[in-house]
Length: 378
Image (spheres, one colour):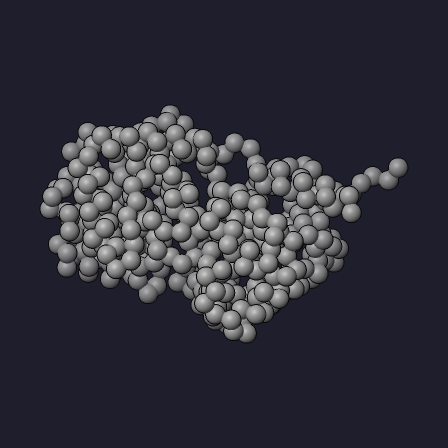
């Protein structure tokens, strides 16, 4: 009896650097699936964005990278023929990533038996609802060849649905527990810390948070605000520092830049409150919220897209819109004044991480196993 060939799984996309939610997800997916001996896992590398200053921008370097990706695809097809499963990262609703998908997906479809798309960047459904131009029509055409989709919240089922994809799996980010002692925040310090982490710019709520903190800073002299992450153009560190000086909070705000490993963990473990103020139209799953829950931090979160689905009962929520700064300032002031509320949120935060987001076996491996089994029945 002939020996059955080992299934070939290809994961496309960019791994860090730079460090962003989608890049981190792709790296973890590679590590996870490569650990399973039931199949052979390969990586089709993307390097469209060497740094976040060029994110979603068109340039010649990206055209050259596109040509190199075509070459990698051609080499893959020569070595492997038609692979069993290809997992592709959706570019999202902005024009440049949409063009990337339009020109790549038809060729990807040719080299695989099954094509699944990971919708990390959300907002495609919103764009298709607002516009019906040439790009949007072509996007629907190339996505017609997609067999299934992976999203991270039920809220974001709307994106594959808008493209006609009916088979959808909801798989949230899960993290390895770095807080093994289940340490909770210490609220007895004389100096207390509000942490804001991730990409720093207007769509992630950074300037709005500065304004809100400026409104309440004099009421809470024991609290300081820490910003951890990378500034995304056109918002800059210089602009951020200028706003802090204007608000008179420059001595109360610390800007750390990008931290990794133990330095990053130290900031989470030494903070008492975490703020996630995103109003990004592509927001799908705030990975930094799960990191904050790992450390048992009370969350103060924008009531936006799928944020409630992620943070659950571990957060206080504020409304966005024209009164976002006032709403955030009011909620922040009320939370900082209520130690009992912070303690309760802290306990719920750590419990939610343990029950929902702690790494506990791979849903991706289960999905891939099921899809490979379905291929065998064809």
